[in-house]
Every structure is written in C-alpha cells, then in structure tokens.
Amino acid sequence: MDPLKIIFAGTPEFAALSLAALLDNNMLPICVLTQPDRPAGRGKKLTASAVKRLAIRHQLSVLQPEKLTSKFIEDQILPLAPDLIIVVAYGLILPRPLLTLPRFGCINVHASLLPRWRGAAPIQRAILAGDTQSGITIMQMDEGLDTGDVLLSHPLSIRENETGGSLHDRLAKLGANALLEALKKLQAGALTATPQAKEGASYATKIDKAEAFINWHQPATSIHNQIRAFYPWPIARTEYEDEVIQILASEKLDRQSRYSPGTIETGNGEGMEVACFDEAIRITKVKLAGGRPIQAAEFFRQRQPQGKQLGKANS
Image 1 (cartoon, rainbow, N blue to C red):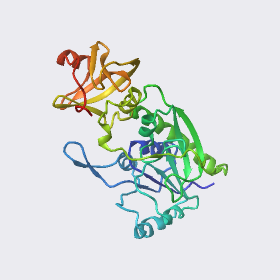
Image 2 (image 1 turned 180 degrees about the vertical axis):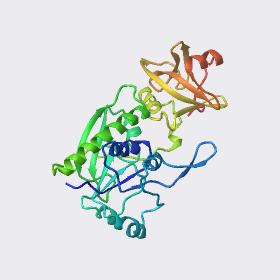
Image 3 (image 1 turned 135 degrees about the vertical axis):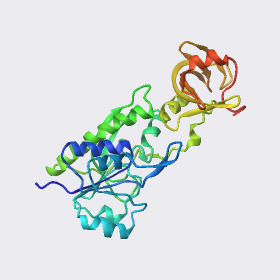
Image 4 (image 1 turned 45 degrees about the vertical axis):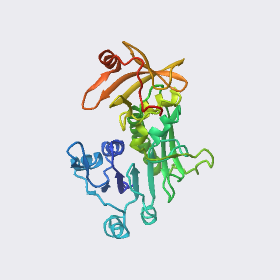
C-alpha cells in the first residue's frame, strides 16, 4: 500500500509528541497546520507553537491560517489531495468541507475516554472532578464537538496526587502511541468505528484564570483537586494579607478541622495545615509574587502565620 498523504493539524506540546511519533516512523506529513505565532512570555514576543518548531526542524511545509475559510481550503488544502487529516489539540474547528475532503476523513487524538470530557480542557476537568481514570480516544471527526465515532481507545489511571502537568505528559505519550496503532490498523483495513455511548457525556469547558482562586469554604478534597489540576497552569492561588500566594502542591490529611475555613492551623517540616469547609489540607509548596517556589514549611518559618486567614475575608 502506498504511503498515506497526511496533513497534521496541531499546536501545543501535547500535539508535538504525536507529530514526533509520525516523523520517527517515517510518516512525513505533506503539510502541517498550526495556530499563528502568538505573544508569549514577559516580553510578549511572538512565539511559534511547539508543533511549528518541530515541523520547521524537519523542513515540513507549515500553514498558519487564522481561520479555515472556504477560500483557504480551496486554495491551500484541496490541491494537496490528502488521504487523511490528523488533528491533535489544533485549536480551530474544522468545517464540513475539510472534514469530508480526505478519503479517510479526519481523525482526532483526544485526551479522555469519550464521551467523558468532550471539549477544550479534558485533562484538568478530569482532575477537578476527582476522576480516577482518564485515557486517550482516537476519534473519527464529525461536525459535533468531540461527538464522532470511536476508532480506538486506551484507558489510563489517574494517580492519587497526579497534577495537570504530569497527566498531560503521560497522556501525550499514550496519545502518540495510540495514533501509530490506529494508523497501522487503518492501512491494514482493520480500523472499525463505534458510535459513542449516548449516556455519560460531559463537557470540559476552557479553563478561566479566575477559577484558580481558592474558595476555602469548599471541601478539602475539592481544594486539593483544584491545586493538582491547575499545576503548572494557571496555578491555584489565594490571598494572604495584602499578597497573592500561588499554591503549587498540597496533600490530603483526612482529618476534621475545628477552625473556620482558610485558617492556617499549624506548620511543621512537612508544610502548613489549612482548614477547609470540612477537613484540613497540608500545603507543601508555594510561590510568592516575584519569588521562587519554596517549601511551605519555609514560608511558615519566615512569616509565622499560625491562626491567620487565607482567602478574602468571609469569602
């Protein structure tokens, strides 16, 4: 069988791992689609996506449309006559003319076990919800939001203290391997499509930075999940006196608290313990504005905050 003429569409590091897997297995895309360069960092310098950087290193053709217009598809994609378009965290919705253009359609590498967590932020939403399982789904794309038929799926257990960052990295590797498996089955004519279950669908809406602020009047488990999910971005945070403190890591204590939510109960070499709505959690690592990440035990020694309040008063 002749090699597939593949167009790869992706943007962040998660997608770059799938592109790297294609390149490592001599499946060179005929073209790469990625988001336009965006301002990044303190200097807001225009920065290429992880996928673009990888594609340029391998001298691949790169296109960066702001929108997938009919004219762009007709002028730039139609002449390429792709057999397949692979989409991994691209960031633009594919219109119907593009979905139906390749003879094998468009497939997507999605970081959840569909229909659980359709949408933009499945990794963080899974941890926020306290899920114990995530996974990768290879999906045949349709016009809905992650509603297409399932071609292949692999589960992945979420570890007890898993962060958004660590789950992202493990799923990115699993996704790259699952993509290769799906392509081999496709070329062998052994890839079958199964409609998604009608029940159990949930939507992983985009993360808003405002969600990062901790409401200490929530259960300890919910706050611990928030801290885990939002590391390394946007990072959970709380007010302390006239400062905002980023909370980088925490541990569950599984003990009741008799203090008002947000009260710093005590501190020791392991961190500082804070009252929540029901139980308490131990904060283990923090970062102050303009400072470096430090152990919460160091913060406690320096500030002696026992009995003081985190969060807005009466929040």
